[in-house]
Image 1 (cartoon, rainbow, N blue to C red):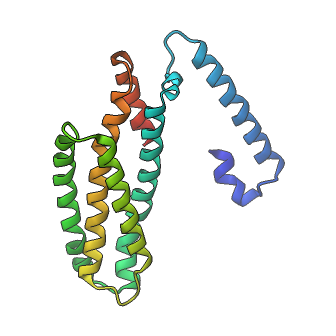
Image 2 (image 1 turned 90 degrees about the horizontal axis):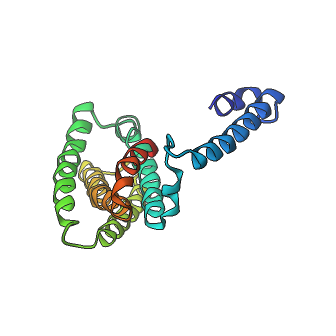
Image 3 (image 1 turned 180 degrees about the vertical axis):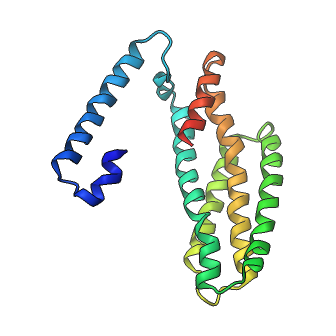
Amino acid sequence: LLALSQGRREGWDAQGILALFAVAAVATVVFIVIELRHAQPLVELRLFGSAPFVMAVAVMCLTTMAFRSTGPMFPVLMQRILGFEPIVVALTMLPSQIIYGVFVLLVGRLSDRVSPQLLVLFGLGLYVVTFVGYAEITVWTTVLTMTTFLTLRFVAEGFIVSPNNLTALRALPEHQVMMASGLIGLLR
């Protein structure tokens, strides 16, 4: 982390930065070897031998990055670029927050009856539609359009979170579920 944070300032080819990257690479290899040999590892790396778990973690990482990287930018975009007043921004974002809470609960229950993979795929498709819509935002974008895009984004996330966690954990033996749940939280 130090190399990543200081590399921009000191230069990526600076001796100190290269040394930090080398130390990080060696430490990572040592950590992996120790964890794989230990009877009770701190992080059970063998979980990554399960393809459904790996796919669910990959989906979670990508959607979390997309979700969290766009989230803080919308209030800035709406106020600075689109010229919305702060109260309008808050009212524009409110419906999506409420709908997210509802959809996480509904889809969580639905994932017991419908294939979780289908729900995740639907959510990912809705993400694509939403992000294509984001690309069309201009200074003439209306409050209704912004509310719609934000709501679609949160509905998509609602279709992904619970079924994706279920897919990740369902693929594992019972004794690994607790470690996998903690690892998912750490990766998120």
